[in-house]
Structure formats: structure tokens, C-alpha cells
Length: 111
Picture 1 (spheres, one colour):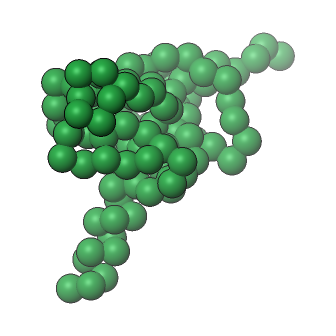
Picture 2 (cartoon, rainbow, N blue to C red; picture 1 turned 60 degrees about the vertical axis):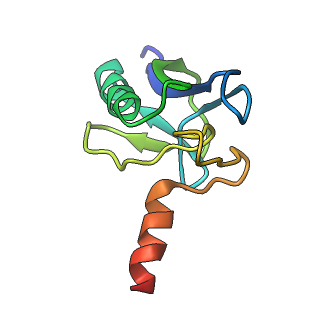
């Protein structure tokens, strides 16, 4: 039986950003996102690229599987990515593990 290929989305913030250069795998609730197909990873990267500033770019690429990762088997994924600021007005530390979805949910609960 062959080794299963795993894909992820690599987020890169340019050194031109006021927050400086950074790179990290996209995460959900502090855990790396993994996709079962390149197409699903590319769809996620394309969506994230459509919502970011010129200083941030997302790339789908093959990665090593990680224990505890969030496995996405279809394009029906949550819209959360951590590790790189989506724009220069938001800075998230890739070690904290906060997702935009969890922030959004917390704000909804406050209403």
C-alpha cells in the first residue's frame, strides 16, 4: 500500500508588511489544516488570496502529515487561517492558535 499524499496551504507575509516577514501552515483552532487533494488545498488558497492584502499570499503544496492536524476531505472547509496577518491591520501570532472562526463565534455569543 502506497503512502497517502497530504496537502496544506502555506501562508507567506512579505517583508514589505509593517509586521515583517512570516511564514506558516494555515491552521484551524491551532492545528494545521491538511487536505486530501491538491484541488481542495488550491481552492482554499484561492479563497484566502481573494480576501487578503498585497503583502500576503497563500500557496497549496504537499506536506508531511502531522499528528492532531485538522483533515479536510472536501472544499467545504471553514474559513480560518492563522500564522500570517490577512491584512496589515490584523496581526495574529502563529503560536497562539486563534482562528478567525473562533473569534467570530465568540463575538456572536456576545450578542
